Length: 320
Image (tube, rainbow, N blue to C red):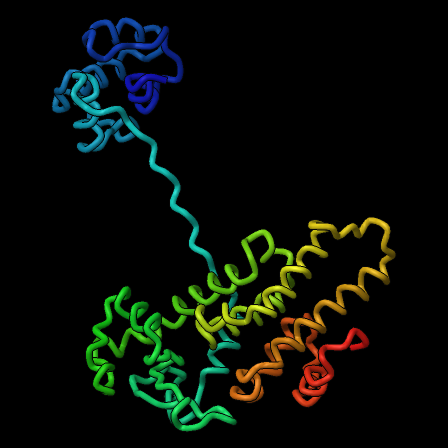
């Protein structure tokens, strides 16, 4: 459909006698449209196309806004660029509410970084994980933002926060401190992207259960992308597990029974859980580690931390 056809269609003409070149003049346009348009309305629209909107009748059903009139005149005169359809906006990825709730719960230190209304405070604090010496404790602000981590500082700067006070171990300005709660969800969204990258890609991410995706997002938020990607053995086991789930890279699951599929699935996840548990992180973050490891294993029963320690010491036995 030509530009002028679009204009005519917008003015109520459903069919025309052919495509029109707007540079050939208004008279030719009118002749082509005449048989398909009521006389009274045609006179009205002829005035618009000719650039004389004042001559048109004030009929609310055929009214065209001033902006549309100017655009139509320009197109008719051949002065306007070709109309380009707007690209649909990309839908922003979302983090599920229960994932946000879990991470907020894990990052909450009552009386330290959150007020009675559940808002994160503009206050610097150190984490108090078990088994950490003073030299290993990280400084955080608000929703567990590790201000000793360069990636976190860059994230804050990208979102309009002046991090200069943090470098002197001082809270943010009042205005910037007020942004912390709004930035929490953005940071969780970044952690989810880091988790997807760790898993492999979006297609592999979709092969995991909701419980597993929640666990990996929580792990990525807690560790940061750099430390998460240092879990190389866990990543290798996860890659093999996804190969098995997809029947690729040498895994032919077509001849396995339902029970054999389940047993193999459970085996891979037990090895993955044991590998993640065999890390200093597991002992540093309290109950969070037990919750996350069980989620990675697609297990909602919260097996105790002691069991994971035994599994790890047992060299991640196939009998798990």
